[in-house]
Length: 173
Image (cartoon, rainbow, N blue to C red; front, side, top):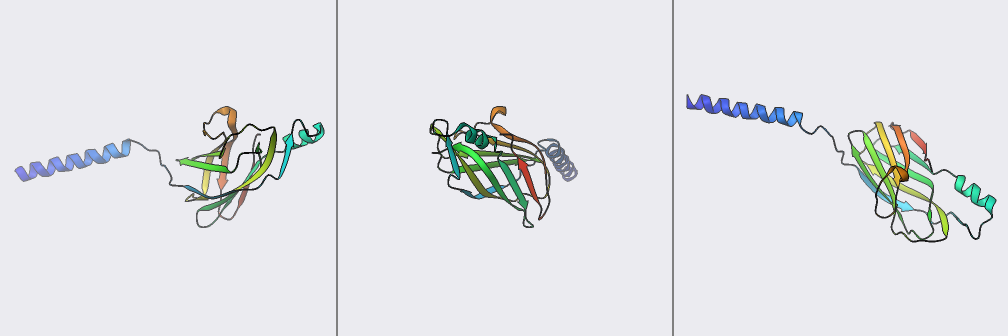
C-alpha cells in the first residue's frame, strides 16, 4: 500500500512539473552569434565647415542599406552599406539578439568622439545559427553605450529569410 501511495505521489509531482513547465515561459531565445565584423575605411567624408552645400545635401540624402544572404548552413552573410558616423569612431560593432521571431540588431562604434566631420563606412559581418523564416526586425544605430530608443531606430519591419536569397533593406536614416 505504501508503495502504491509513493508511486501516485511521484506520478502527481511529475505531472505537476510537466504542466508547470509548459505553462511558464514560452519565449524561445535563439543562440545566434555575430562574427567576423569588419568595418571599411572611411569611403568619403564631409564637414559642414569645409564642404560645399550641394555636396552636403547629396551626402546626407544617401540611405544606409543592409543586405542579408541566408546560406544553407544557417549562416547569414550581412553587409551594411554607407553607414554614416563621425570620422574618429574606430571600428563599428554589431550586437544581436533573437527572441522568438524578433531580431534586434545594434550597430555601435568603438569610441565616441566629437569631430566636425562625418564619414561613410561599410560593415560586413556574419550571423550564425539563424534559421530561414519570417522575422520582425529592429535595427538601432547607437553610441558606445548601446542604449536603444525610437530616436536611434533606423529600421523596423518584417523580413523573410530564405536559403540562397538576398534581402536588401533601406534604413530610415
